[in-house]
Figure 1 (cartoon, rainbow, N blue to C red):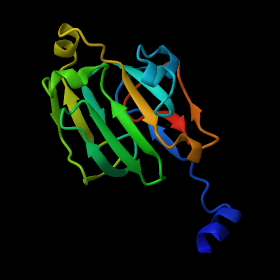
Figure 2 (cartoon, one colour):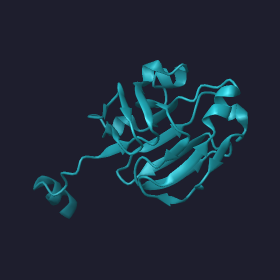
Figure 3 (cartoon, rainbow, N blue to C red):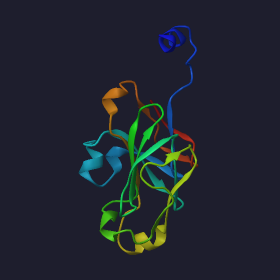
Figure 4 (cartoon, rainbow, N blue to C red):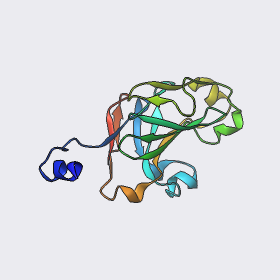
Length: 162
């Protein structure tokens, strides 16, 4: 009851956002060279062409899945967004090589905590694209979601308004 009263009287004006988990150039999902992402099969979001090999938590929440291969991590944010950060395309095939995980499943993270570091140049040399999609898997829960693309960002700059 108090939560709905607070919302009714403007007590919850804070904009719910997903921040950039990595520095680089933000592009629309349609530019990701993988139909699972470009056709938004998993959900809507943005992708970042990274300029550095460090991924940080884009919001506070719980690490739901830290993939064994360290190429992807799933977080349930405090705002209820269920998101996946997927480092590169087909990088699961690297079996964890060139990736260092700093969190594990069940860890609670704050926005900005380091999740994964990756050797961007080694991954590119192995023939993989390092574009990093950020997908909101429960997109229907956020009907007014706005994705911001076409800009350079530093990690923790806003990229999605929920």
